[in-house]
Image (cartoon, rainbow, N blue to C red; front, side):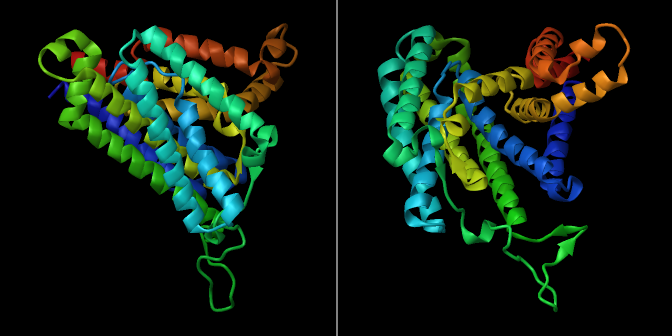
Length: 355
């Protein structure tokens, strides 16, 4: 019974976060807050899918944003060419998944037999090639400028989901039931569904096999598991989920470019979120994504308030200058790794098990 305390606390926290995300449009009624909530939903899926690789199977890949970009560009190109219809979204998502599966299968079969560091370098090279192609094939991808397009009509801010007798859009708690709200809940429920699928996967016997491969690949091979086949399958599964996340984000953002879909900075963010939340926990994806995205959007503001509060104190206003937010973000990350060596979720679960 005591062993369940840490797990119960983590699950209650994760359910509370999903609950806040569900009611975010009504709790935080400004454009920036809604953008933050949507980004958190997307990164929960991205981080969870990457945790399937590094946390559950021990695969270190630097190509995760490449698959995210395939899904985003698939939707973007077809929405630009075919117009703002659901057929373009569906075909774009399918195209992104197909390309991701082909590339992931090729990279997996050719590279997963080599040592971890060499596989990581191969994925990094592959992702770099994808980024260069996206920047240079401007006739398809828009080059460095990216692609701007329209989302389906349901997601237009002017769309009225419900109207009253006078033809005015219905409001609930001051929030208009319009296309922007529909777009957010498209992101939210899509992300929730993908996250739930991944939680079920790691809870199934497949999850146990993946952990066995991570802990001792030779032993797993010796007892009859085809390690390369399992690792390739998980690599493809992770790529497909990342691609779908890219499609969802493209529909929400209505813009796709190298910086938003293929940037190596996104890969760094994913790695940090996995480490902060806890590798091999899946629930840690939620905690890591929330903390990292909130820090990226609001740490500067908090530092500005703190700097104003200590005006007149020697040195402190300079240290708390909002322009130095990356410095403080790095310090916070170091402290989190020091005090939570297994990530926040992993450490809490371990502490709960020891009580």
